[in-house]
Length: 261
Ligand SMILES: NC(=O)c1ccc[n+]([C@@H]2O[C@H](COP(=O)([O-])OP(=O)(O)OC[C@H]3O[C@@H](n4cnc5c(N)ncnc54)[C@H](OP(=O)(O)O)[C@@H]3O)[C@@H](O)[C@H]2O)c1
Image (tube, rainbow, N blue to C red):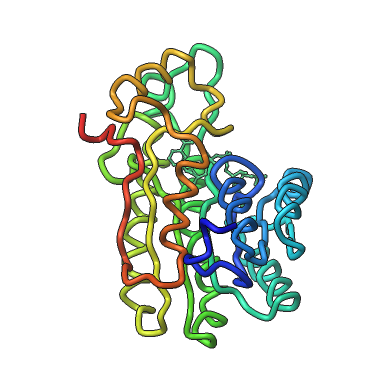
């Protein structure tokens, strides 16, 4: 697709985690449009297969793989298959994420904020911080070998200024932002960039519990006047995946300006 020509995606090997829905799905489809060899990671292969079919409209090289980013073994096995198939990894979108589900009538602030057990609390770190760490470590050797890597981490505005969602979620997203900076410092000399995007509210399956009233409140306090789509956020992420990039260790807030309010 012409719009991505100067981003240099054509022929690049790109892994997108959490590619079976929402932001990851949009990132995968856009990368496929740009001609990338598009690798989809997520825990449920059937979801990935559907997105893969969409990606195949734009590129022949699409590889969906069932990988749990919170498991070092699963990540090593998955990235090993990518290296066997394509010989390298050049773009990594660390996007997989989880949030607690609300029961009918519950709110994050009143019902989940101070009631989470250890396993649930740490599960956020396992996906959002440890998951990025696992993926980075598995992909970096190939990036060093080719003196090229673009890593983009989906975090959250809640990781910058906190909010009423579950504290484990918020804290793990903050950890993901500072971890992005740490990797940027260490691997910049190999032409590997690490940047983060921090979305506000996005209309994806993760927000299945949000009421129409919550959507309305966020839209009303957003200068751009609406809640983000997955594609809005994918476009921000793709900026950091481009070939000619002299930016690393940064976190871009993508919330339509709502944090100004
Ligand atoms: N939606 C929002 O308002 C919002 C706001 C700020 C930040 N974010 C962040 O944006 C990212 C994408 O979320 P989304 O909104 O697009 O929600 P989503 O549609 O629920 O996508 C998250 C994806 O991550 C995958 N995933 C979860 N745990 C995984 C694991 N251990 N290993 C591999 N894949 C895993 C899920 O698929 P499987 O269950 O099949 O593995 C799912 O497809 C997340 O990091 C989220 O925290 C979202």
